[in-house]
Image 1 (cartoon, rainbow, N blue to C red):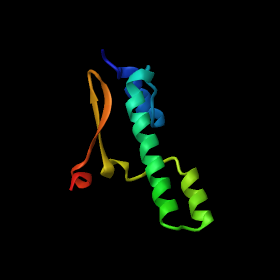
Image 2: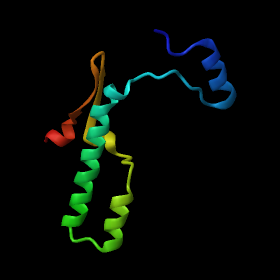
Image 3: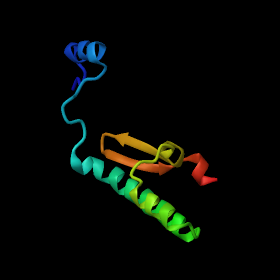
Image 4: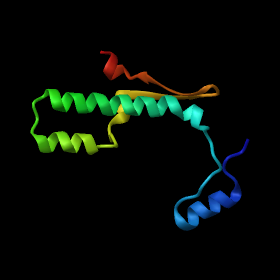
Length: 92
């Protein structure tokens, strides 16, 4: 299955992006979504446990992205789906 064709490449060079057909099913993405939910809940629990002020807790509740997520997890994409493994940094 070829995901990127000549038209996609041309569009990328013209406007800086292109769209593909669906690459992963919802079922394949579920493990990654569950891991993101786990990381979010863990982060919120850590902020609350730290005794942070109410504003910091509310900011943690509203946080939906983690720019350093790759430092915490290794995302595995295989023929069987998407999953995560702890990174070496987290294992130490």
